[in-house]
Image (tube, rainbow, N blue to C red):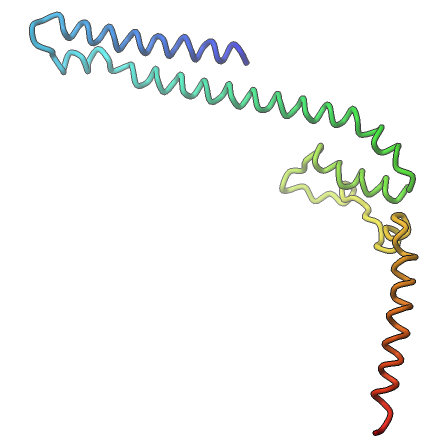
Length: 156
C-alpha cells in the first residue's frame, strides 16, 4: 500500500517537472510559444491522471486493509461473546445474524445450506423470558374484554 502512495507521489512529481520543463522550453525565445508548450506538455495530463488513479487504488487498498483488521478483531471476540449467552436459542440467533456480515454471499448464491435456521417466535420469547409476562398481560386484558362483550350483548 505504501508502495502505491510512493509511486503516485513520484508520478505527480514527474508531471510537475514535465510542466515546468515545457514552460521553460517555450519561454526560451522572446515570445511565449503556446504550440511549443502544448507539444512538450502533452504528457502532463496523462501523468496527472495516472497519479490520480494510483492514489485512488492506494486508498482502496487502505480501506480494505482497515476493514479486514476490523473483521478479524470481531471474529476473535465473537466466541467469547456467544459463550456468555445462556440460552441456546439466543446463541443460534446471534450466530445467524452475525455470520452473514462476516461471510457475505454473492447475488447468485441460492444454496439452501447457507440459509440460517431462524428460531420460532415462541422460542425467542421463551429465551428472553418475555413469554410469561406476555401471557399474564393477555389474560388480564382478555378477561376485561369478555366482561365488556357480555354487557353489550344484553338487551336494554
